[in-house]
Length: 505
Ligand code: 4AD
Ligand code: MG
Image 1 (spheres, rainbow, N blue to C red):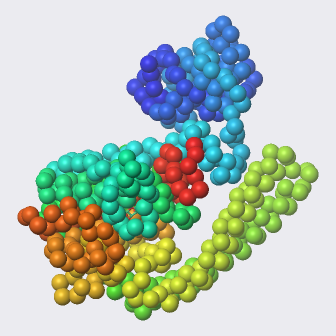
Image 2: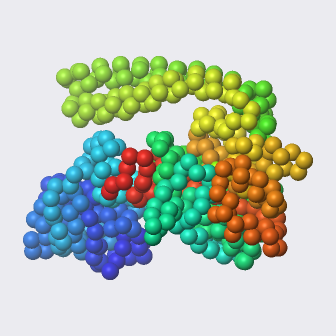
Image 3: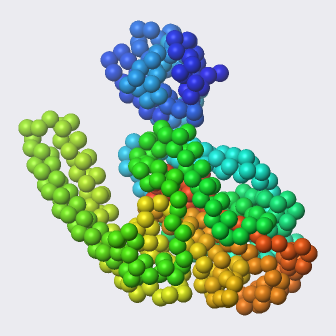
């Protein structure tokens, strides 16, 4: 059996490709089929002249997403996707079935989400999932090559790791159990046994909010290292993200191109990530502290001006194109082409309009940001606008962070946590910290956070027997996939998203 991905090694050979019809058009005595087989896409040409038996009529009868086996010769053709074409002599229909519900037109996203099991076959979704796979592979390579052990945490748990508000409760033989929000606490125990570990598994958060960053079920990678402080933790995070992004840039170039991803920002991850204390980040956000001559409030005001100018320009273009569309002397094809352009421009303007409505609120939120609070989505976006790479914000106010984070020496109001904020509006992709090692402080924090002490007894044991400094972090896989692919909503970054209001398919 042969695959499209291997066509470069098969030039001139007669082979059979098995797959699905991704696209089809007919010419005079010719059928052009874009076949997809999971490994790639390939134009296959069936000519009436060269087709055996009823192969030509078989080809003629095929429609979108019918499955078939095409036999023919591999010919180099630079113009084609993938650079090769199959000149087909034999067509076997595997299954025709019903008319495919996803057609070559604009479907609403809700419709596509309802048909997610089929939508996955589209070129864009295919590319995203291939990038996701590359990221997963790069993550394992990075940690394995550094001597980390993958160690798995349970998914059914008896306690909360990240606060009690987002727990999914379930029944465990009559006892209340929760779906894991994070493997971290178990990761800490395993780091005490194995030194450097990482967990890689699904995690669950009952987040009743419909944002483009939140899923109810997402995959998290959580390394945990014995004898690490938070500075070492940040070094590791930086190396880790640099390596993963670089691997994708090298190995999934075509997919990123297919997604229309402008990779300029991604290339910049090779620079060191600025490390900013929370206190300074607050000043930057409020416009009280400049970053390389850039002031947050000014940057936002400039954004408004730029967007307004863009809007005017696009409106002008629409007017011009409408003249062509309404001119009955112009060929139908040209008019259709212009109408499509107009539709795209109108969509662009809608997006610009949305941003123009949001920006004044962002400015207000930034200007009036209260020291000690957590950054909202827009605050994160504003902060990262001041930099050209991901940034690391560290030393956070204790009240807004989890119970396990280590207090700063001499100032218990702050903890040694770190968040990585991705540029281009993607926000927090990593959360991590040095862990509290002192059993007494930890007990106080458990009480302060209103957590049930008895359920943390085993965790406290880690501080009773050979407690050591240690640190770790958690990367949200879907947020990283979204940022790298440049997609606007996490729902497309995972095959079957689970989120508020969506359990099917
Ligand atoms: O910041 P979080 O809550 O940190 C932890 O869970 C720690 N226990 C990690 C650790 O130190 N081992 O979550 C970590 C990351 C976030 O930065 C974000 O990328 C992702 O998990 N994340 C989500 N992704 C999608 N949907 C959600 N609802 C998410 N909540 C967190
Ligand atoms: Mg966090």
